[in-house]
Image (tube, rainbow, N blue to C red):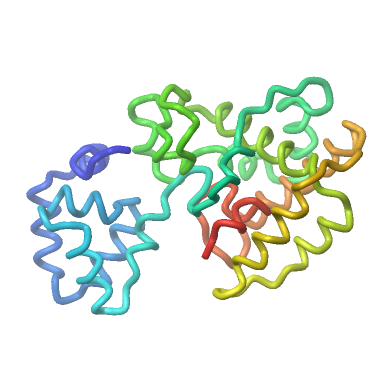
Length: 246
């Protein structure tokens, strides 16, 4: 994960200038907060820049009704705690109709081509500066530190993960999970439903699974760009991602 100083350098802003901006707007914390959110500057980045602890910064914003969780949700794949769900995250090593290129062709027929390509890029360009995606940047702790910062990497991870999830879900289970009404208090109920549904694999042909994943990916892409809920992670609104949002 880039430091606050590195993020500022990416935007060609000095630490001194950033601190001047913060001091000039200290009585208008929403301006500081909104600017940080726009450029992907997290609570930790602000701590690097100002020298204050993340706790102090969070408490400061909280006193004005601003939640720094919104600043910290910048991960490329997931911005949620998935517990054992992380074991389902992985690259796509399938071939033929379930290959990444084949699935991509199916999805591109359903969405705008720019929406497709941009979906597999990070919202915050500084995350690509060193040419690698770290576990912190991806939001998945166990993928290692040598993942190339390319569209192809994210594309493979998205399709690989969706294959790992949908290969275990039959139509009735999908109907229940997709019709679940999420609230702030029923996350554990949804998690239990998902864990139970993932306890035994379903029987689908590769062609059926490919068409299902293509349709679901097209929905994800359209919701990502045009839906009511704003997220930064490509899989935040997936069945697996929703299981980690409290």
